[in-house]
Length: 182
Ligand SMILES: CC(C)(COP(=O)(O)OP(=O)(O)OC[C@H]1O[C@@H](n2cnc3c(N)ncnc32)[C@H](O)[C@@H]1OP(=O)(O)O)[C@@H](O)C(=O)NCCC(=O)NCCS
Image 1: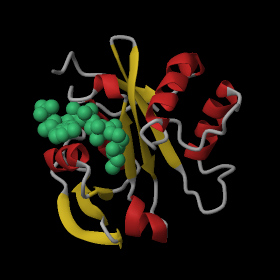
Image 2: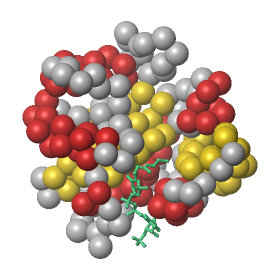
Image 3: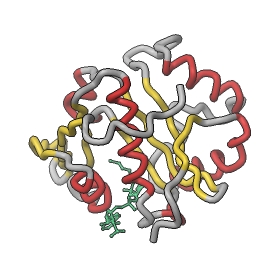
Image 4: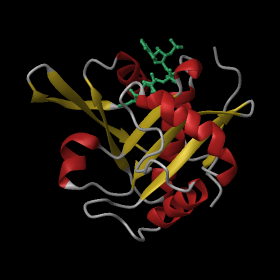
């Protein structure tokens, strides 16, 4: 059930309470909602750091510039997506350009699909014609989201026995409308 398209935008200091809740919920599943967030870090400071990282400033060793966006529906922070602006060897092998997560209570409403499409538009705005998106072979939901967005399966890489990643390439040119505000 889709209650309406979410607004996809950058994280704001006023999102603190819901973002902290989302971070705790995803941590229970072994995922990070707030990427790179240090426990106890000042939240407005984290938001400002994300803005610097988007511009390629003050990146930790081995990290690349990324755009971090959240989806908001009916006033609820429902999910997030991160778009890496380039690939490192590790990202090219495993992590890909884009990672997303939706809070458990808001799944199966099309929000991951909306987040992935927003990240594709953002990638296109950055001049990326194709992006790599990967997911665990066993992650049925993510496989469906990627294939719904026309991901082209390149290969499946076995990282460890019983742990395989599916790697997909995706064109960013499909829906150039609705660019995100600068
Ligand atoms: C995977 C995840 C992002 C999907 O988010 P979502 O908002 O529920 O996805 P969508 O609603 O856009 O799903 C689109 C379609 O994918 C399929 N799908 C989604 N979740 C599914 C699931 N658990 N099982 C089977 N199909 C699923 C469905 O076909 C769905 O459409 P439908 O609900 O109309 O049938 C979410 O489950 C999540 O955050 N999981 C934890 C973090 C994670 O795995 N991130 C991805 C890392 S690669």
